Length: 296
Image 1 (cartoon, helix red, strand yellow):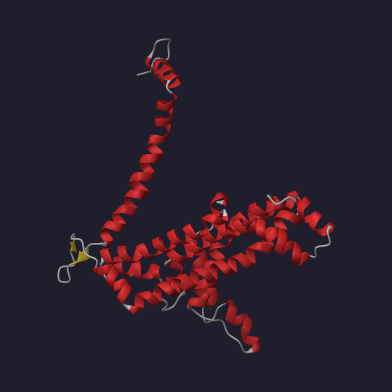
Image 2 (image 1 turned 135 degrees about the vertical axis):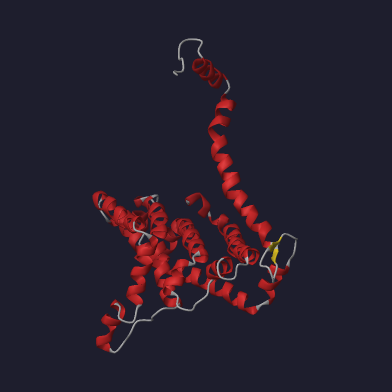
């Protein structure tokens, strides 16, 4: 069966209707994406918050769908969860600081020193690790930190040894995994910085550090904060890397994973999952005045 496109046919009448009604055309264009956003994203987030106020029957393991604040009271009153939350935030901050320190000089070289041809290759080099699988990269670091790994082999001639599995290994692994998400926003911010401003600072006698402190850093700071939104949030919610290289360390993601699987306590897992969401909302409210959200 073929659809007629002749004058007066249904396709032409529909095209004419859409042409005369821009609002109808816009509604047809946005309906499917908005449904996806509302149902798949906001719907699942709403289900998470609702589930966090339910409980689990201690004998049967069934979910009791009755409003209860017990999960949140446990999160606040039990010191182990406060410790895990502070530890998770500390890991996310450490990863963000390391990525900022590593990314800034790399991005500066890419934006202000390298030739246009080299810039393209460097951007490809930064993006290349993102094409590799997450687990492949995480297990590669597990091999690096193992007792017979590269770090021990490299440090053994001077009597040293690697840190093994634990929080330092988790921080290094996460810093490696999320580094491209910091480099790219900083690189974009530096590219928008006019070279004439750097030349003017030099002509006025400003040395390198003063040029960085008074010209470069204030203008690129929103881009650094934009990159930190990625590195901080991704580190805060990660649970795979710490499982692979974290040893016995516990972070928020582990608690959520263990309560969904081993403990079969979905309401408490949902309550724990609201912690990084709340932290990120506070973080976004804190950084929105820096202009970072416009640099995403």
